[in-house]
Length: 168
Image 1 (cartoon, helix red, strand yellow):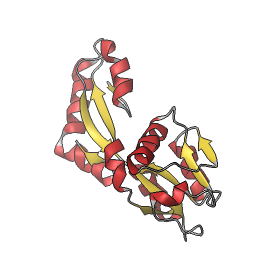
Image 2 (cartoon, rainbow, N blue to C red; image 1 turned 45 degrees about the vertical axis):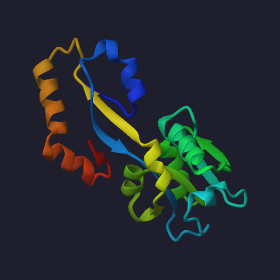
Image 3 (spheres, rainbow, N blue to C red; image 1 turned 90 degrees about the vertical axis):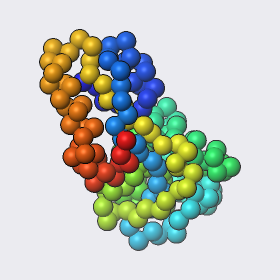
Image 4 (cartoon, rainbow, N blue to C red; image 1 turned 180 degrees about the horizontal axis):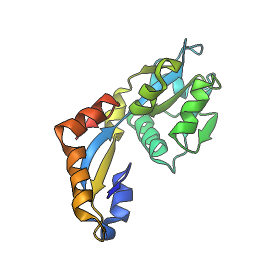
């Protein structure tokens, strides 16, 4: 069984999998450290060179999505740092090293009270789809399919939405 955080990654693996199904979606939100010392609340605030901003590197899914969100909003970001992944980006916010960043809803939710979150309307235009598939040469295809079925079931979708994902 293979689940990926992007459809392009699953497409790269298509020769080794049975047909994939999207099981969840994730979108970006603007986050600031608890207390919001930099007074950020809109995407335009992350385009302000007076603010300290972290973004994911464009080579990773959250960076590509961030690029698309800014393009959809007609804004040019003013990042002070590009981080290797969403976890590193969120860590900069949690530690108060930056005024704001874009991270996934799920990561913001997992950070709890360490961050404050603000919706970004343009984020729906750059959401990440998460596909899942059974490997063609799985040594346990019935168990793999049972897991895929669980993820796609009402109970599995409830777990995902509780974590902040949008259901499939």
